[in-house]
Length: 60
Image 1: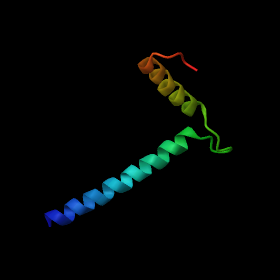
Image 2: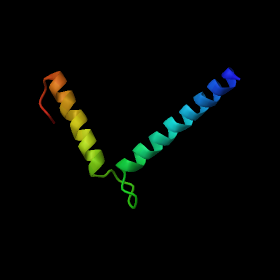
Image 3: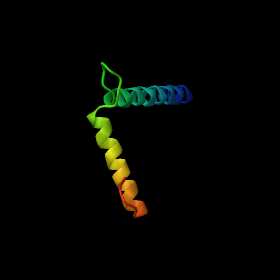
Image 4: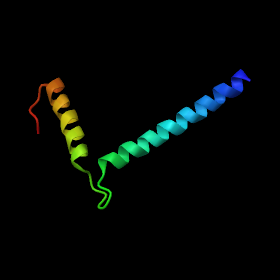
């Protein structure tokens, strides 16, 4: 019984991870055009800023 429950939890965890990836992708794209939106821009900007700070290089 315990092993069965553990397998069920593993399957549900994987399904949840996939669903979260889909939602993340949908939240970064405009629903009509499919192009990246402001939220995507903000995330990319923050990541690039952090990279520039870590590498002590100018921001492009």
